[in-house]
Length: 449
Image 1 (cartoon, one colour):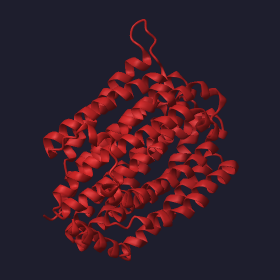
Image 2: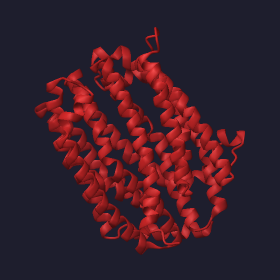
Image 3: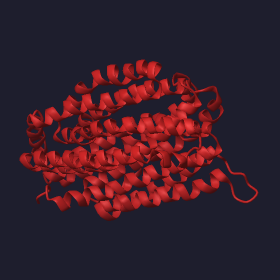
Image 4: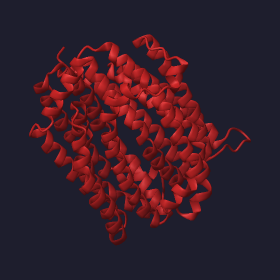
């Protein structure tokens, strides 16, 4: 089968785009609901979401590795090995999820202290992080099971799960946060309760689809058993990928602490702008995930030339889409920001940040698309090596220094510079075929199964 056919790429990227659009819409509506309580509640939600995303790096080890290894095995027609790998992921998810849940339950105060969280939001943010712990465990299962569904090209089924999961989250969040009748609701904590229930629904649906689409029926043993031999190729891909993400998140936390130091208003502005910019990166993110799935299959089948052409096309489309959306967001900032706040100082500051976001999002395209493609070929180490210096010096140190001198604009300049430095390095790797030896090695490994 020719996986580089354009309708095929769109058929994979489209449902993935729908998943991300739903997830981010619920997140931004949650921020909108919180902002109606106070800027402090909005800042608490934004800060907690960043902590949660950082802790999810543990799950990304499995999701990244599972997606790549299973696509390579399926491309090489090694169906039984793909099934064993998928089931082995559940036990790893259980132990990883318990570790994340324990961190949120026991370390919430320490985490917020490290992030320089303003005193005004501590009474809200700390209990909120603790309430997220059980939902984090369920999210670990959902992230990994969704990655395995997509690797089997059941992207529409994955989208259906996300529609039900995110819509139920939002439908529950509104009454739980705002109350019903004489009941005032739970405020910010209602968002966490709705999150937990919706993730339980998502897990149930994933189990049904695993049975129907892939004939995968986990036993009790699969939920607890660790299988190092089966997971070794997964970790070979997933650990470097997640290490790069962990490095990014750690450096980003430095920038978040710098923003928090500027006060509650700056922290809320930071949260509003980042949520809006997530919509800008959606298309490139969907293209990147679709390319990663297809490149993995092409590598397993030995179609290296088609993989190279596919990624170049994906980068071109991503630059056009992200550049256009970032420009539209900057132009529409005065109206978009009124959905969150009426404070003219916040609106003015957000507009400045969104103009810087034009450079940020175009640079991010390379990292969203090419870095994933490199992982799919088995070239997982390069992105980590190429990124470490930029994380430490440009994103981390840069946001700290520029944040002190220029405030929020300085932090966003550091974001943009970091994306361009890392993006040009990974694009050079792809353009000069540095990934090819790794792709050939991955193909040989698949044939040995």
